[in-house]
Length: 600
Image (cartoon, rainbow, N blue to C red):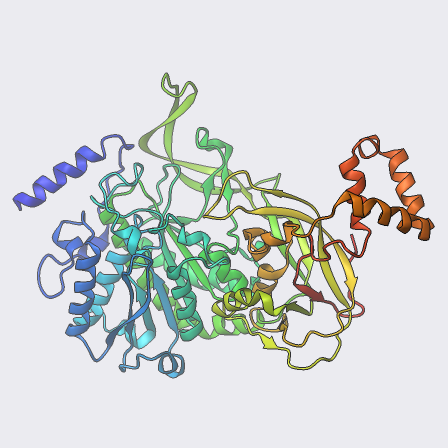
């Protein structure tokens, strides 16, 4: 008791800089046990502590020992820091292998916690839920679904524990760090797959084929009444709209009802347009494929992103997560056939694919449960700042700007062709669960386009360890005579949309944009002027059309006319000695004969 009093005093002093709270006494408080088998560290601390990696792994072992007929654990990967990434597999009849899970007639939910290990609510909520199953209190849950639970994905970041990792979050007292041991954000890695942690998750999804994927986070941003916010890509901006509609129409009402009955306030997954003026409205974010839920939308994996409200107490957030997971399992048991049917429909790859969106200029209006605030002029920042007052304020019609306006969409090729020298790209595609064929014959292929970079710009600073690049392209018709030994990626497959996002160079989360093809920007063979000048003179003499083009360029472009280097480089580019791979995207794209692809 005395230790709990000291702990509570510590928490109050640490949170003194945060906005005042609206008092909460939810029914879900009854879920906490103070003693008995498998009482969690979270519960023993009065809802203020989350255990270390070592203690977490010990609890995994105790959980399985308590019910080995229905619980097992598997190591799904190892971090760069050589820590094991564990997953608990829970099945009613002790069927733990991936093949058994897929064939036992029950739907499967994958629950992932600690991708940002400072946002660790899902770990402690999941342990309470599994404990209640293991001890018989909630054994009904395994009659509804198989459960896959990753308590900590970012295991290295988890051990970078501190009381000072998240200034705007109420607990736990010590929490992990946002990025992994290499300072990479795992929830930006679902396309480039640089991290062993995300590779492990993708392999789990490919092996177990879960019907629902739930990724648990804690949000940043403004203050509001909602304690549990969650969402998915809405149907109007989704590349898997049938799946999105089932989540919206079947799952969300069920989960919201569970949360409300237990004293929680569920809300939409939104952010704030202007953090210093809440009334300007909300940002309806649409996740790109680099994020877990954006990847799920493209890969036809029904996904829910949970973003608990960081300003609510840790105990309240964890209990709300328990209720949400309970509701998600229940909804999955009821609606899994409808969800599975929608998932099957979305296996068909469209002929066009939206690869980039921006926020709409015109909002829609929604009711929203906010918190009163006042503005003041800060002598520290030199600008107007916001102070939240801890009093409820409901907006009847608050504007929300959804990120739904289309910036760019691309024609989806029938197939991509990857040269054998880029086999590392093939390896990445295999991790993504994309089907690939090795070409073993020398038969020619037709209707092939090759993107050529016409303009480009590298980011000034690295992002997630990469110097990203944006480019514009011309699409050249090419006639490859022999692609034997190359790899073919057909887009007529379940993950054809994902393959297009990864391989089409105009997609912002493509391998190209992330920097896997930076070598095409290098020229490695050069020319001496004493050799080029006589060769070019002869070339222009033999090619009057080219000579006229050169003269016209001299007349119309004074910068070109006055720049000897530019003149000679242009002439060199017209010779057969010029590097034919320079600025050429090495992956070829095949289109149907009648499918139009503009040569820019």
